[in-house]
Length: 278
Image (cartoon, rainbow, N blue to C red):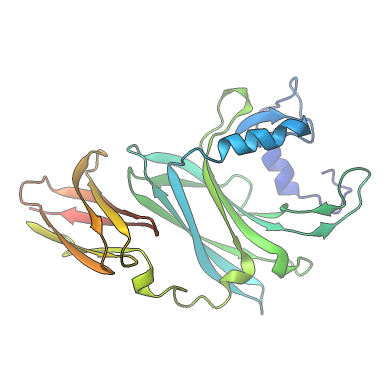
């Protein structure tokens, strides 16, 4: 929106103009991008573009946790980005504080506004991240809410994008959102350990024999995959979890180095790194 409107976000405007001008060499609002591809200003087509993209599997899963203190209106978002790709991913993580249910009767359109951009954290340029093949990268991002924002209607939104390409596109790997107030008082995980998906490796570093402790809800099917540094599959096992399961890998003939481990279940995904030494 223009600067004279109360919902104007300077960073949101800068982010919009970070794309090459999509409309005959200029900018035009409203304009839709889906998965980083420009989709024009014809409202009637927008729902179709979005519904076509939603079922497509993503190469990255984004999990958001963290804390928020209503007393000082400050919080910290912990963002875990888990890759299922066989190739490394270099991208930018964009973290946005948004607010819903804002009433503003502009010159046209609906007077109720949702997903209003309030703040890009740290700014609209995003934060570079590097996710190894089949691995994980974690980003910790402090944020603060302005006193004029309703904290009960605020969300932290995270999305991961590649570099700008031709035709004003910037492909999106995935996104996630969490309500700010759901982060209050999260000193401990909200779900008991036996109901979560957890993966650990012992000993680490390892020589000759690695033991993986697989924890997931009892009765769920799991697959444990171990990838070498080049992304190739080094070892894999699958089965049905009995809450906690130990799997043994004879690593005697494997080259030394850092291996990425990924546990995949119907209840979620967990990752770890294992270092093999001679």
